[in-house]
Amino acid sequence: MAVVRVDGNFRGVFLEPGTWTVRFKYSPNTVKVGAFVSFIAGMVVLFLIGLYLWRFFYREEDDASTVRRVAKNSLAPIVLNLFNRLIDFAFAALMARILGPVGNGRYATAVNIYLWFEVVVNFGLDMYLMREVARQRERSWQLFVNTTALRLLLFVAVIPLLAGFLAGWQALGSPLAAETVWAVLLLYAGLLPGSVSYGLAAVFRGFEKHEIPAAIQTVTTIIRVTLGVLVLVGGLGVVGVAGASILTNLVTLTILSVLAFRLIWAGRPRGVGRVERSFQRVMLVESWPLMASLLLQVLFPGVNLLLLQRLQSDAVVGWYDAARKWVDALNIVPSFFTFAVFPIMSRQAAQDPAGLRQSYRLSVKMLTMVALPTAVLVTLLATPLVGLLSGARFLPHGAIVLRLLVWSILFGWINSLTNYVLIALNRQRYVLLASGVRVVFTVVANLLFVRTFSYVASAWIMIGGEFLLAVLFAVPLRQHLGGIGWVGLLGRPIVAGLVMGAATWAVAPVSRPLALGVGLVVYPAVLIALRALTPEEWEMLSPLLPWARLRQRWAGR
Image (cartoon, rainbow, N blue to C red; front, top):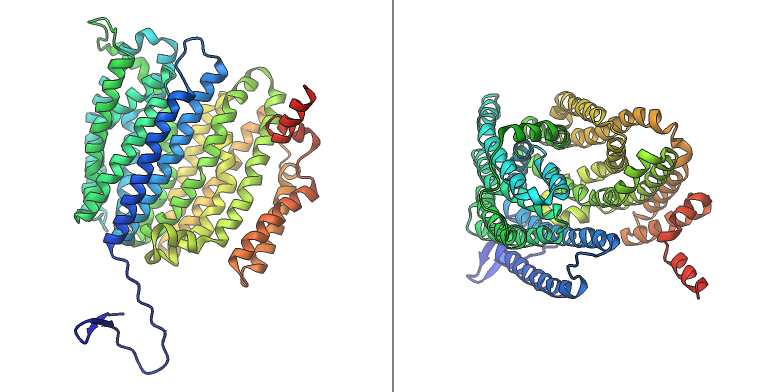
């Protein structure tokens, strides 16, 4: 509706005869940018306070206990990762409101394409370098030099592949927008310093200094979003945001290089660290399975998004991406959970298969018991969640996608755990095969359904892909662990989820906040009534329960 000036001073709109309610909302970009700048200033203050307090929480000691080192190496990265995600979420909210669905769709497409080639350039060398430095700290400089030389060689070698992909995609019809292509090229240019930074971060992790790259990542995040705001305000759009990554990665590389030469390589002998071709061939042979696995992981959602852009439009991708951001945020749960249980399951895979089966069953049940109410509540609150993050221009389409897409976590979270269990069982090749089948399914399903059913089909394909992978993963699980007993394992939590869903949707037409409260009460009540956890599972969980620890302390007095 057009707003016009009335009597030289007031705002007004033209209305047809009848009764109307008119609401004027004043929210220019300057107000949004000001709010974001205030938010970033507050986050910087919190970060500096955290750095100051960290000096009192932990002091470097050569004879520190294993438990203390593990706590330091896991606690700091987890906290800072959550901190960074909060900043990224705030920036995503601002960018969505400035660029709108079309601009956000183009940037999401550019990032999606870039990630494929980033995986190839890094080639799994981060994990290889971290592992080898942890084993041979005295050779850390030689390892870093050779992996860096290999990264630079791969960076140059992949350029023709990227150029060929973009040229071929543009020639197929319905080409990418010019700013999308430029964004891809600028993101890839930023990978040159970025890839070297990944190597330096891996060296720090090999020396069990995980908190340093985690803290630098926070600094990088603050710089990146600050530059992003400046280019958005300057009207540079998608291309400007992508270009800011180059400067951000250069700053990160500089900081990590200075710290590495001061803290790790201060006493490095001269002349150590020649490039050895035979050594690099060994690196490639040992790293390619991880590269292939990571590439298939990013291809699954990436192909879905790219074909949605090809068969629909940039705006549709923007709506879809507004929902995907929430699902990606939720996926931090299985990520951290797997990070915590993987060392235990790795030992059990080698020494105690029966214990591994028991641990896997309990882990699957716990993830499902969290995923079910999460999916129900996100479905209930999809409209306000998308509106909060991306704004009214992404509604109602973004909310429709989120109501569907969130249900992929029921299978996706379990797959995240099962993936690492199979790796612990030395079934990496099967994982690659299953992931490849999922990518093929995604391509075929997109070509069949997305042109007709748009983003609804894309969301269902994501759910179907996760379900397919779960079915494929069940085959080697049965071979190594025996029957899991899925119905007996998950039947009661599923019943509790269904009761919660029915109660929530019965109350939702009256009041969403009331429906939210009802759901949060009904679900745990039904779990308790059905005795979803067996006595053996309660016994396994007892060391983690606060009242159990209190009882043990009281008994020890």
